[in-house]
Structures are given as C-alpha cells and as structure tokens.
Length: 159
Length: 128
Image 1: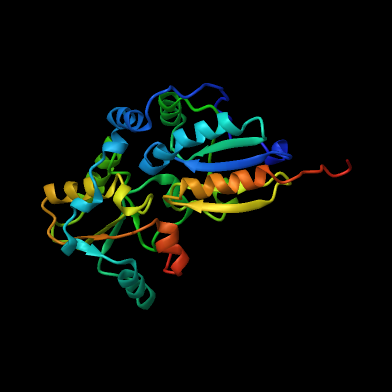
Image 2: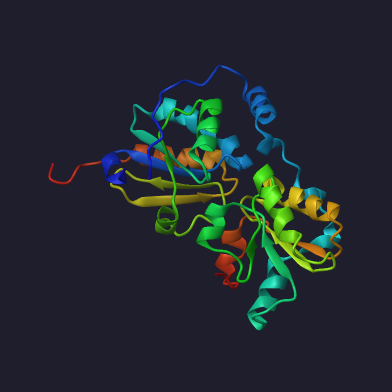
C-alpha cells in the first residue's frame, strides 16, 4: 500500500445537491450511460448462467468481463476473458480488439458487476460497442448488487 | 501503513474507485464526518481500487478529500474477504476489531449511527 497524501481541508459551504451536480458535470463516471438502457430481452440472470456453468465446463458463450482489472484479478467467471472497462477509452479499445477476433454471430455474454446495476458505468457502453460492431447474439448478465454478492457468494464457478 | 497505528480510534475503512458513481456520492459525507467527529476519535481511511494513482489523485482533488487515501492491491483486497464490488466500507472499533461491513448503497444514517455508537464506547489501552 502506498500513502498518497493526507490533507485537511474543509467542505465548501455549498448545498449538497448543487455540489453533486457540479461533481457529476466534471466527472464522466457519474454521467455514464445507465445499464437500464439495455433492452430487457438481452438480459440474463446470474442463476441461469451459474446453473449452466455448474453443469458444463464449456459454454457456447464467449464471456467478456468489461469491468476493472483490480476486480478481474481477484476473481472472475470461469472461462471469462478480460475485455477492459468500457466506460474508458482504453477499455473500449480493448473490447473492440477482443471482440473483433470473433465472427459477428458469436454468442457473447457481457458482464461487469463493479457496482450496483443502475450505477454500472461499463455495461451500457460495452453493449453499445458490440451493437455498433453488428454482433447479433449479445446477452448481458444482470448483476443487481455486485459480482461478489450476486455471483461469488452464490457459489457459481469462478477462476 | 498498519491499522495498529490507529488503535484507540474508530476507523472507517472505505474501499472506493473513481469509476464508481455511488462511491463518489458518499465521499462528501465521509469528508463531513471526518470534520465533525475527528475530535471524538474518528479516523476515515480510503482505499482506492483505481488502476492508477493519477486517476485517484484527480478524484481526491475534485472532492477535496480530508483523510488519507491508500492504493489497494490484490493481497489487501483478499485480507478483507475480496473486494468484488463497490462501494464497501468496514467499521473498526477502538480496539481494532471489525464491527460492521457496509456494502453497496448503504444507508448513511445507519452508518453514522454505528459510528456514533462506537465513538461512545470507552477504550482502555492494554497495560494502562
């Protein structure tokens, strides 16, 4: 662990709502496209995929993790490929590179789980990216709370 | 840095990242609590899960964070049972024992209540 710095400053006397709005305008992550824009027909629940993975070591899906390295390094869905955080330009570029190795008809399952579903900054940009690349069989794992609570804690396969 | 250095204080250990919207939403609250309860013995520590120090520094400056921020690594995350989703905070009492784990959009009033409860507990250092 590295200490960055320890500073003592005081909050500006600004109403919280205005402060948060200003913060959001300056921070793209708070203005990120919401996961709720993904069509419900494209969503799959962890229980569905978890059960399939428990029965079979190989799924027909290419599973792409579009979250952060610090999460992927700790644990990820067995067989998943790291494809970068799609909320960031580098992450989106990595997703394009990873996906371009597959035919457009490849069944792809996207997941992130870094944050509660409605706050996830990565999943909607990743979905949009694959749509723009004309992939025809993309599904998204709907992780309500986070990967630890909704996947790992349920005992679904991880690596 | 060791948590031992904060023995005698109530510690709120908050795992966060710049890409985590709910984390950035709750950090101004932590800044306010650090100011309000410092004299009573509250110490907030942030642990960044960002991939780069530069990204964390940007968020810290924007928010005017008034407590120390550390960079996480996989071993540290494992020590706390794996940090596989954010935000996550741990409340540690004056003796250094884990008291509560708060995950996701935790209720701020419940968190503050727990902090106040621990701040109100007497602490007698060993050997005193």
